[in-house]
Image (cartoon, rainbow, N blue to C red; front, side, top):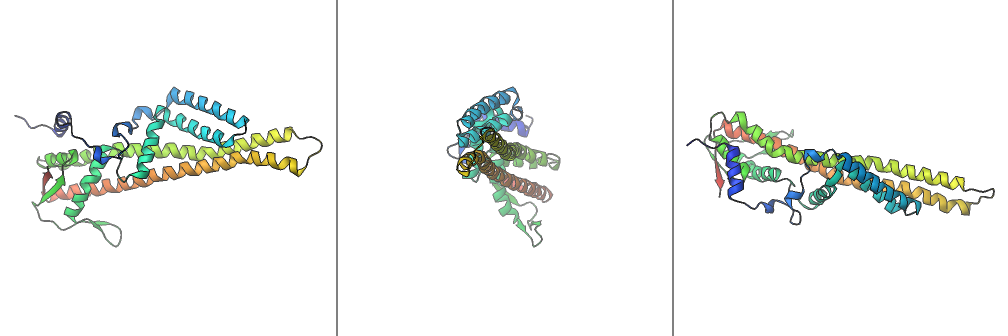
Length: 284
């Protein structure tokens, strides 16, 4: 009987075993709700309609001089504009990034989990110049990896000839989905962070125009000060919300850099396994 390919082996395991991987994720978040796929990257008509509806609500709050809620609704409107119906998933991903050290995509979590014993086995460390140093291991040694789909794929590939032609592509498949999620999430939040000060400034200018239009012949400081303070509040709230979204986006950037480093180190480790003809043993 012909050997199964790694993809066929994965499909049979996923459909047959029903293995629960929930331990790799933040306890209160379902992993199936966190993925923002390529189809949702462009919000389309839904994003425009959501933006228009929320922006109309923000205008009502602005007219009634509830500037905090007005700017809050503007920020949500901008998020809906770029994410469409994926706003809730972006929120859950952001919460997970803040309160969990694990990745929000299963494949990236497997890469993170598998890299730990690989580091220990290969004695990976940083030298004085910041470069990764490996070493030394004996040819034909046995590397014991945790039981997950990535470890089983590595084991299956290393048992075949010409493993180097496929092993990095396989590792990239475990990396790219999470990289895409973090990249899109960071870009969405950066967009809102950049736009909020502009909307705050627009609100201030509109407030000042309204104030000057209502001025009479007799103007006092006591009359101008409260109106000027109200007009400047939109600029203040715009800067505050911009800072909040910027801080959240920075956490995605940090996690993205960590993921990139893990992937680079993982690829180096796989090349060493191939060159030294290391055998992989999966702990059941």
